[in-house]
Picture 1 (cartoon, rainbow, N blue to C red):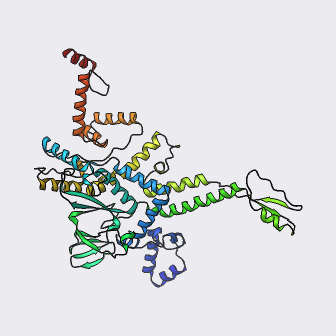
Picture 2: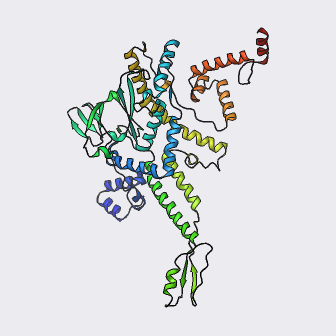
Picture 3: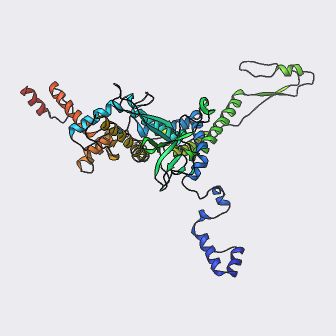
Length: 478
């Protein structure tokens, strides 16, 4: 590598340092400093929580602003929450006797599949999942608190779930204290184990309570779930989805407004009088608008000049590229963001679906299930055992939850492919049923019941594995 004058001078004084400078330059161009890397001048070394501490409140406010005022951001957050949770991530415990599992599922459905589980009395547990996922996508994290209540005829268990925005955690609680140390409102013991959270009793930004100067109080970790997507090891708070494209959202919004104003000016077809005599000031004041279908008589010596605003060339292509970048920032496809499927065929649609399905599976099984679903099930079991409604503890670990299925693009082709995989021993029937969002045991029982009903009614469908000969024989026996 040929050095510059400074490199040659340093090498002449100290050959060792001169060689080191050349090796350093040869290692990573992205690690050098110059005009080409000036866009990376804000890059810095920081811990997993340093940047969050300085920007959390601002990012949260801006994310909510976009969701309230920008249709693209609102659509992206909606896609993430619906595709991740759908109709609900449901438990499918498998360890225990048939009677024990049936009893546990019945009690779960009485509590979780009704509004009994909700502290606010508005949603089922599956609706709570949807709300939690939306909060995570929009604000970065979400809090669920276990509230202890008295059992009622509607709610057989002495617990309910209260969902709070991440704002409730006092992110200004930092530093060493008598219990260890706090970081962004999360309390750790002296060994660095998370033991609780500093939580406000009311939302700190509500106008009705902001003047009271409320203080945060410590709540033990056993009664709190703080759910967020972990992006760095040691991260204690979450950040909104799509932060990497917030600048694109802002710039594109300004660009759309500018295009709209330009088109309004063009549609107005504004005109200007020139060469008017000095004694026609009154007529000039009257001639101040142009409306469709109206003709104005000009004075002698006057002429009309019309504006010629530039056309919006390239608007569509530029918008598509920007929207592709916004979709990438939220980790969804351009088609999901814009609902524009005009250029999609089966192959491209299938490839895109596979790509984003991995992202949603990651949110389902690496975030929602271990952080929310498993912990809520454990709370449910604690309450059921304590009240004597269940005599045996049934575990429902991360692998026992069933996420909603990914919709098929071409049901015929994809179903045949799955049948071939089962026949070749590459997957199991139970796994395919779980991918469709069903509990295999419940599906099998329902299928068995339906087959019995069809046989009794003398009905035969090709989907029912019953040959015509078997059907005829059954009818003769009757």
